[in-house]
Length: 216
Ligand code: B16
Ligand code: MG
Image (cartoon, rainbow, N blue to C red):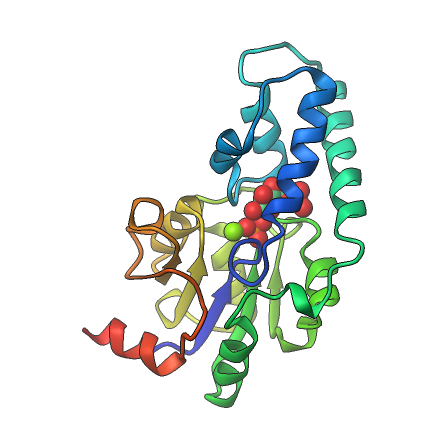
């Protein structure tokens, strides 16, 4: 029986992906590295460092110091750009599902790779709805390793098999399955088809519907 939900942040509860993209694009332009929206798709749910290494590819050689500086620079651009986000930046259906789960007595955790996750959920006005937070500071190994979600489950006091992860990234679905959890994938079959249930988004989604689909 499912007793806890673990929500990814970017792409599930809000669309900070666009702000991450613009910050990476600005950095890539400054460095003369090739990058565009299409290339950005590969960065969905990927940690800051791994994202930068994907952008650099084998185009140039950078020292560790330069890599650190670029990670900090991208983060400054990103943090500046999310300064004004608010509850209106919650994706459709997110708030309703959080409320339904609470009423059903289901525990809720955040499972985000982002080091800015706490700031973002505070701005979105949903920080008080979280029973636990797993973010970019919680574990060493990024998704697709299950560590982040296992950390969240532990914080909730639940077994992995009692937890359901909601993810928009292939690496996140992979992490949930590797951890022995249930997975709901948001987006296309080609991206999140490995999940137990695939939905286009959380819009109009009810806990009862998810439960029914899992029992099919
Ligand atoms: P930060 P999620 C991920 O959030 C983003 O999807 C990804 O684009 C970003 O690089 C990563 O967090 C790290 O974020 O630079 O703020 O630490 O999808 O896991 O909620
Ligand atoms: Mg995501």
